[in-house]
Length: 594
Image (tube, rainbow, N blue to C red):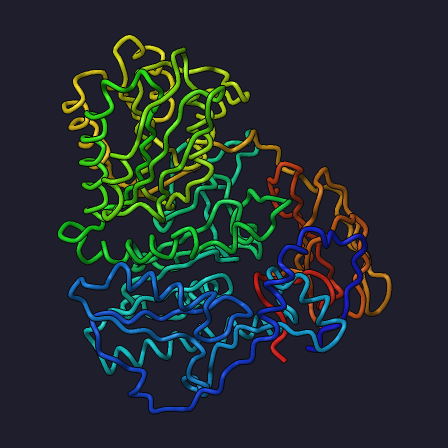
């Protein structure tokens, strides 16, 4: 079917302008020529074969998709004693049984394709190209896995995909024999389905928000309202009980593609950070734990140490320094990360970063801690709230890591602080990060003042002698296991947008008019399960349609605070079909492949 135009008014291009530079850099890439080789060159009999499906618009072996995934595998499996190999769908030009995953791209060769490119991080270009791409990818994955099984019956096959590639994986599961695969990982799947995220008719709560009825395949989905992906969910998402324990779904918070809670000012931020936020590594670690959950486990610890360096700390500083060096080195040796900060009173000085998670290591940690000097002070309390708020915002915390903040002080704190930061704000930021557990080592006289902060962040207060307190504190931090399920506790009060009075009117032999009422601020429209795009308008003319097949058009809206409500649909008996190529079309990072 040839794709024609739909006419949308008042498209909010502000929401996608931030993606433009990245978009053009992808648009100008040229796919390198790949020479055809024998099938046996791809069928490598290692312990594990990782089969990866890239996101829409990405090149084979791209820095954006495949290489970060491969790096995550190397980080987790490297040195483990297991051998492993990779096959990226679409990397063999002739494919397998004639099918090779194209992951349609973008371009700037015409005005229509240029305007499509503006929304390419969400778009699918021609919907038929996108649908055909997913189908071809699923066929290629199934055929390659079948051939791997024949050539290397002892190799464990792991399917993984991002964005459109995640949909390829979930589509493949509907076709393939579950016995052929060891694990399947989907990252940001536009067809994700989590029934526990569906809201009750009489309440805004969900089973997931109550900590109940988690889907077996829910590996990391912080949004407890996540119900269906933006293209509607595959139901069931786990097509067979034989996938039990094998299928694992990952959906970043604020990912408009698979989540319900989106950031309207940064519409692409949640979907574009699976590599940067460590979610690929988390998924690979989950695979590793399937084979050696007890004997090989990389600890995942993020530890920040915050020193009060006011003058009154002088008599205690040497002891604090010695124990902090021991604790920091223990975390580093076990593969964790450490950051160091000092603070006092904002009236005298600002919090100072000595080193971050990226710059602290075993070569500099001792010198940095021993180099801390005390000065100033002479009054109480200190600016702990501002200092802890600052460091929590600055540091790059790993998703899924145990996050701890050790505070070493002999004083209490301002609430609110001198810059207005309150205890409630610090606790809310801590919880939104995972949380960050506060462990305060202080004078017994101030234990009560820190009790609320420690309790609300899941930490503790220590007032015994320094060596004993550090022993207890290290045991507490390092013994904590990363939770299997993480649900954000810092969601705003839900105000889901609703769509009502949806009317679909045929206006000619090739066009329809869509009218609806909504209390949302931006609307997402799908046509026959493919994404048409985003618009602020509630009266939309869709033209240049093929009327040969039935059509269903659905609308869902997002509220000003970012909650995307349930879709409302309308259909016509006459049969309508159509496409779009000049607005934000259907899926992340995609476009035409011409």
